[in-house]
Image (cartoon, rainbow, N blue to C red; front, side, top):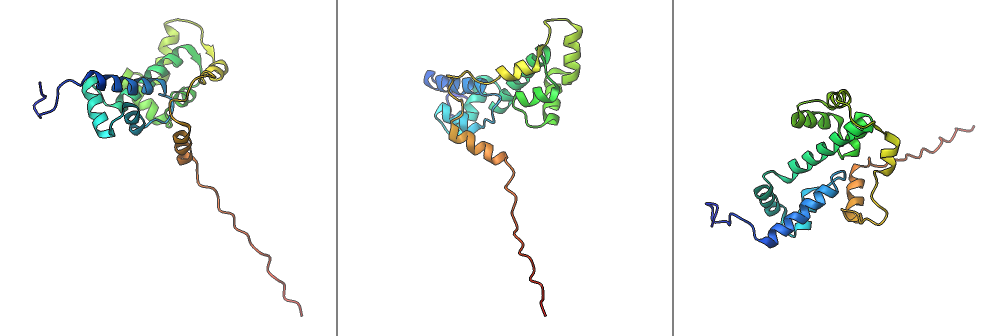
Length: 177
């Protein structure tokens, strides 16, 4: 069976397994700076083929899936942890509070602050102290990083500002008579 363009309508079980590995990576590394190339590498295909296949199988692009996962995790933290909205934003992998807030409102219908206020009004478990959440938010000691260390280092160096140039100025020689 084809999809009208000569392509198979349903991926093989091998392709589904590869896409599942990539989605698992996305779910596991949602707070890290992850790009489509990393996910495509996990699935063993080009980023273009990966993006098309992922959207066909899961009904949304990898980027939208990542954003949705980050917002779901942010909802959990806003309900259960005593962290500021900015701390939640950074903990789930967003680098901009404005982007986080607009995506959160688009997906939930409420701003992060409104969502937290509604959760407090509704009762629920007492908030976990933020220091405790941040202390335990790291990976388990024996866990492998989702993104290879070399790739992580390259991503982090892109975020660092360039080093400041050091200008050495020699003192002017005074004119002596």
